[in-house]
Length: 97
Image (cartoon, rainbow, N blue to C red; front, side, top):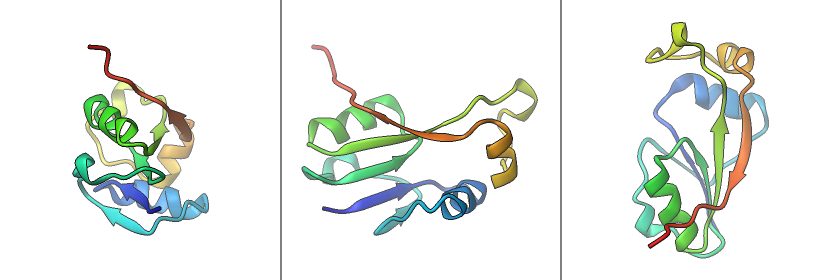
């Protein structure tokens, strides 16, 4: 079992460290097809990749926050993530065919 932290944002990395979130592997991008049963993926994946993580037997923890329009498309600091109510929430996502 491997824990992956997926982000390319320095502020998110700082937030994870500040909040005691540990990972075996830190990646800027994830190949979701490599995830195996029991692996944990933490980040802000697109729903189709999160679905693949779950279909492969992995767990997906999403960095959820409420971003005001004034901060969208900007690099956020760990403090700004806190101000936006950042939290980790586990999702089980299933593709409906």
